[in-house]
Image (tube, rainbow, N blue to C red):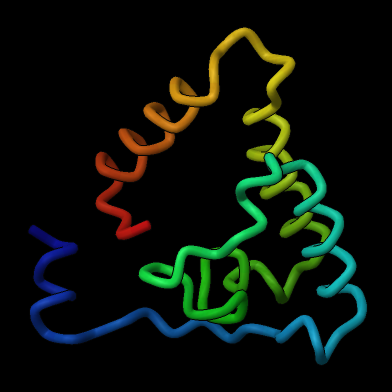
Length: 104
């Protein structure tokens, strides 16, 4: 399978990122989109988190407005005011990640 071939060969996609400490617009976009997420998302999971600049969020850092809109959308979809319960949201997110062969 394609994803497994890349893992076996040790290849990784390289995407230029901008650290939030280096650019005020990136910092603002990341801080603002985080406000949409449930409180328990504030604590990074060490097993899968190597820092924002090495994450899926960091891969959007060249375009702070896109970063904000893409990730605040997910945060809004996780809202407790929606009819799904938290565990149902997590189940859907997990299945999407599995289907897409994401490690997070």
